[in-house]
Length: 133
Image (cartoon, rainbow, N blue to C red; front, side, top):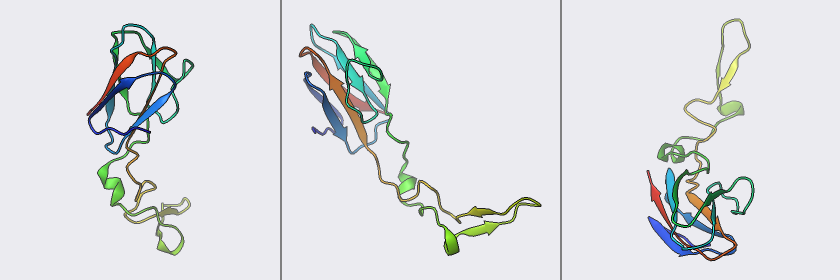
């Protein structure tokens, strides 16, 4: 699987996935070829000429949101959600008590999912991918 930092380019054909360790919020994909529809996905699944993929005709470009799980740098330092003896119990009036892990989050200690973009075409158009935001 090819990797990229800020941008990548290539010639499409069978589905190819490009990944980046940087979690870009958006990806600009441009079909720079003279012929052939380019299909694009940003959710980690393989692009195909089917439901869930976006199409770009020759000369078109599109900006796509990174569809991998939302992540911030804070998620890597916040403690993971505690349970059992490590949980902090808060009474909530007359209702049942809530188990609230003190200073933790279900997303705590999660790693950066990065960025994934998959391209596919029945032809061989050229394309460029660039991260932004």
